[in-house]
Image (tube, rainbow, N blue to C red; front, side, top):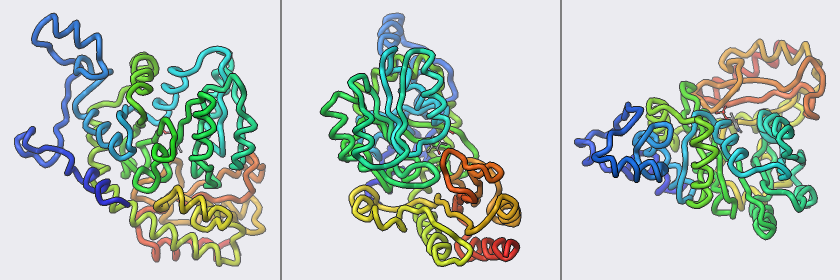
Amino acid sequence: MEAADELICLGHDEDPGERHGAVNPPVVLASLFAQPSFGDLIAGLGAEHENYVYTRGRNPTVHAFERKIAALERADDAKAFASGMGAISAVFHALLKSGDHVVLANRVYGPVVQLARHLERFGIEHSTVQGTATDAVIAALKPETRLLYLESPGTMTFRQLDLAALAETARARGIVTLCDNTWATPLFQKPRTLGVDLVVHSATKYFGGHSDVVGGVLAGAAERMREIFDSGFMLGGAAPSPFDAYQLLRGLRTLPARMRQHQADGLRIARHLADHPQVGEVFHPALCEEEAELTDRQLRGFSGLFSFTLKDADFPRLERFVDALRYFRIGVSWGGVESLVISPDRQGKSHHGLPPAMVRLSVGLEGAETLIADLEQAFARIQ
Ligand SMILES: *Cc1c(COP(=O)(O)O)cnc(C)c1O
């Protein structure tokens, strides 16, 4: 974690003098901004990405959050959205047209695959590469490929792509790269410094950090962001509310402290599970020896989201195990203070090629000892 990044999260990039010394940014609740003259209105409407005209375009509280994410991701600009999917949809809608092709690399967030399928009706094709081998991803690129969509570490199995190698090949072929960086946060991974064009986050997860806000954010070079602002963002209408942006700013204040504990407790629990007689495999980037070199190059740390399989467990045992947990609440999403558990297993049926009896944990802030004791009492129930 870089000291400069921690200071940005904590607010040392802000000037409280601009707000009467208030230590927190104000929530600017206004759907529109009155202009000094008609001429100013005309000029403002001509460049809404840099003027406060209408909150569907730009708002000071939202912009304060965007500036921090741009700085953390080493990008010129960032744009916040009402959700992570709002940000991802905006990229697809802004950059793709009929006849274009998209490659989805690694196990990507499920609704992204659904979005790609939906866009087939508009003549946009896609290929999915569920593995992480660089050669396999490159082999899926076509002359029509316009967007290479990356998620690393990927959904459910948390395997990594070689971001620098893929970004270099894509750039040479004029293909835009986008990386979903929700898992690592910019504190632990900066895809832009590896050559990736666009970085997207579900701000709902670690940025919000308290399971009380849904949001998304996209970061990239000024020109590319302008292209996405004008069409995907302004016409899509997935603008966040100033209240939501305030929640995200408040979340960022404690992001470094939370990530340190998510990392430490996640690692402690993952290692405990790796030695457990009732566990098959643990899927955590720190425990993946094949990827040690990639981890060194790409990751500065690990978040608290990982998965494992129950050894020799059928669906009823999986269900009993999940239901026995007390401090891991059963639910989707992740990145909050409360630990969470879900499984992609659908009554013993293999789900998208994932192993049966797979359990995903989001390690919250209850403390590793409490959570290990919880897991142990659940293992005891299925012995
Ligand atoms: C949750 C999530 C998204 C989608 O974000 P929303 O805020 O739910 O729209 C995208 N990518 C990953 C990895 C996610 O976990």
